[in-house]
Length: 381
Ligand SMILES: CC(=O)N[C@@H](CCC[C@H](N)C(=O)O)C(=O)O
Image 1 (tube, rainbow, N blue to C red):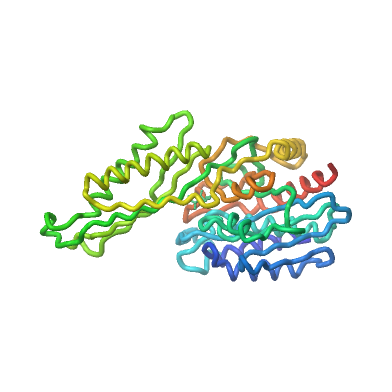
Image 2 (cartoon, protein in one colour):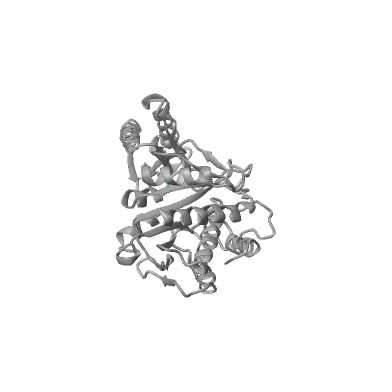
């Protein structure tokens, strides 16, 4: 099995080769290379044609009663790294700013343990592309990746958490993460000369009004006890200061802890876009896409067992966490297969998605030990 030092080297290599959703070819090839170097006696590797950057590894059990799935995401974000680390990203403008390099390394550590210690049940390791966008989990499901012996009876997966101590395991019964809707808004007006606004229809001014209106949805239309989030993370329009642009695009994300809340916010957003379009006499196209970013609902029975194990395991620092407004397309897979998502603490001052995120590598081995122990215990039930 892989040693802590080997795992850290693997993590650093993965950190250097971050790739965006559905383009994780180098990552896929490296993961495959690491898996091929493990004991192959009980392993079956599958490279699904329908999802070319995905990787599935089945560990055949000695006396299988079930197939226990473990999922890790493998994609990165369009963020220019600013950590100054000697092993920083080699890919300009792309970074593992959400810690998926840690997720993959922990999965490889757990897999390498079971490659050397054949489990009783079958274990399915799923290296999933496209968590940050493009709904890789949903796509994989819809493309039939989880059929026959590749179908998990239950599914587990983690996300790293800079707010928790390195190696701590965080979880809760019920909803762990929000559901999200991706928002794309195109404002189509009329371009013109900066000196003659009366002959144009300025999409920058309408976009400014629209953004301010949208930001009243949460504060004025949503029950503050339940809450939700709208973040508009990207705006683009125009080419130069003295040309009025006829097109501006806004991209953002909506978050809510229940499907009902997401739908309520979606509905208000439609109305606000319509209203601003009318008042600025402008065509505003709103495109909402939830894809696979469903609320992450932990299965009651399995999560109870998971938390009980983590609370009693001598070397695990377990923390009961609150629900988070982060999204995860593992929510879609957990709606199809019962299972549990949990946090792995990586203790850092930088937030997820920040250009300076530097997870503590000591979390890796502790994560591997906690998950390996849990899976061993699960297979005895
Ligand atoms: C853990 C995490 O940060 N996940 C992402 C999931 C992306 C959701 C979707 N593409 C969206 O932008 O709404 C997150 O941003 O929470």
